[in-house]
Image (cartoon, rainbow, N blue to C red):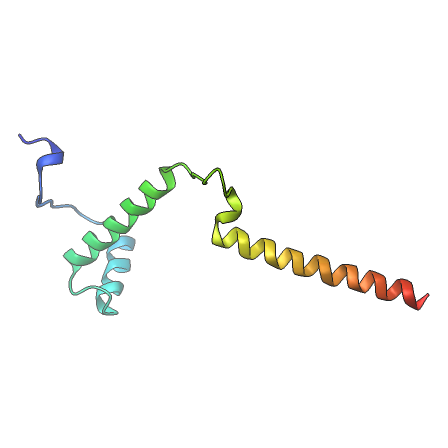
Length: 97
């Protein structure tokens, strides 16, 4: 028998639980996949990619740090805006006294 790394394609017969079958069937009926086999392959491929990504360590460039992440940068920019607005409101209230 060949090691799994050398197999380029292998037919597998399985029985799907009803909830998975209905979920995949809805994807086929909705046009996301052309048939049930493609829906199984597509969803398993997505699940494998997500698992591999989740297991990867998050590596930041030492020169840039975690702030180089676009989402973190957006959050930090918004927090800076809120801080400026709050400082402005505090100053405005102080002047009104």
